[in-house]
Length: 118
Image (cartoon, rainbow, N blue to C red; front, side, top):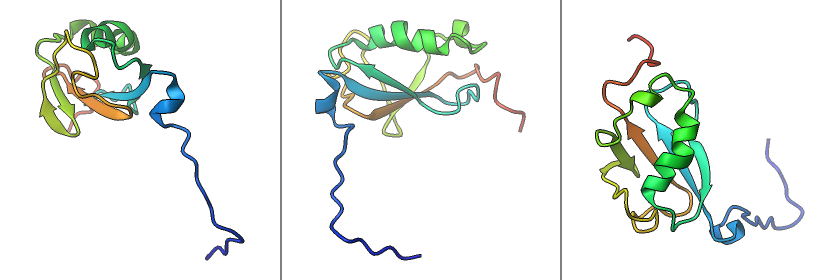
């Protein structure tokens, strides 16, 4: 059904980086782990090291998964913008090219216990 507007609609985005007081939003998803139905949304400072993000918020969020304790972070396959990517764990998120509202994905070969049988 068509809508007739009485005036121009002006949308004001409220999720721009300037509204997060020096932090940024980062989406993180763990492929083939159906316990987590959607990416996690982290609000983290861009100067946080990648290692701090993995050892802190990600470790806590992944903890309920039965495979979490078995993750070998040196073997994780990372994707950024759906392309294979290798983060530097000792550099900041910004130095790793992770910007506001970026999504990174990880795959853990051999750790797919919650993947339904095909």
